[in-house]
Image (cartoon, rainbow, N blue to C red; front, side, top):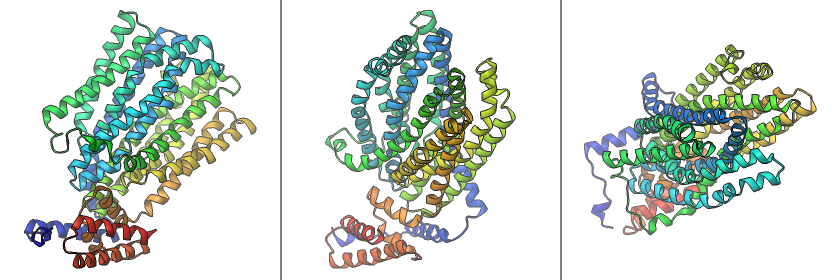
Length: 538
């Protein structure tokens, strides 16, 4: 590489950009100003608002399916609900979790303007999800056999098997849909996703009516309508990308490159998947435990109502989690760790605000909410008793869900997975079993277990997030995306801790390497410096 190529252009724009980054690094030692907070609220709202609306619309789609199953009869509702639980555990949670591995790569690549990496990550993730569909489809095909082996009712199992079989194409739809959502969100393109989802769900209602009741397809009609709606979402998103041209900057032709670097992507995707599945599966375990309580039909029915309500409330912290993952990834990739830190503060404040709102409304409407779902007085009474506990759980759920988004955006999903494992299975499960069965508290004991799990999870996640060294994470982002501003970062940050001292030491070593090896190339030296830095910081 020639000397002329390696010199940075000393233009006013470049100088201004350097000054902004120096100011941002210096801001790590200061409290954010009111104007910075307001600016971040505006940026967060641009992403979180449409994403929350999209989540709510998708929730309505599942509610329409459940309502149609209920209109077909009790057997159809029971079989469909059993199938939905099974497909969530074995399929949708896995695909959603694997797709979440794109968050840090695409978010940070967008911030560092590494457009090619964004396109390649999309292609690789789609292929990974399609590969994951093979074993998942084998489970779905054999659902009826598996459930009969476990001693489930034959008639309910037959309905569940039918629903699951007709839902198989949905694996293909989700293998494309989930990566597309992360791909667009990482670039701040969220409003079109909201409208595409709304249009698909708007069609979903008449589609169910025609297939289920006009054509008398019954349970298969409900499954086909759900699959059709997801393919409509894919079609609308791809059409938007094609006609708007937003794909041009990041798209790369399909080639053998999409079959490479799977290990590095899987190192993020698998922990993300593990973290998602651990939490989703715990709710299914709680439903199973409710079936062993006295009057199991009342306990299970109440659990179904409360989990549906929790899913509704989850739309908003999930939107915050997705948004902060994008914001943190973008700012770290752009070498602005100070702004990433501000994004975390603002989003956590919003999470606590939403949590308190949930506590208030679940307490005020605890005697009325259950009437939207049933008229059974026993179920209504148990629902009213448990709803305040469910609201208290949100005090942990909202901040921990948001905090997990921070961990994803900063490429630390394995930390989130370990916290979820310890909180839900080593804290929540023993407490739930002990209080519900050993101490005789009953149904409310299960929710006390969830409260303990969410509290432990929130405390652990917040402890990790609030102790984050953002300069260190910015350097990791440069390594992940192959950025070329490593030297700028290590020179701008004044060391004040062990890790940041290692950053400074790596910067000095990097400068020495440039002097000694004029023709080695900036990118190669940056990689060496990154490795030296990581070794010193361990």
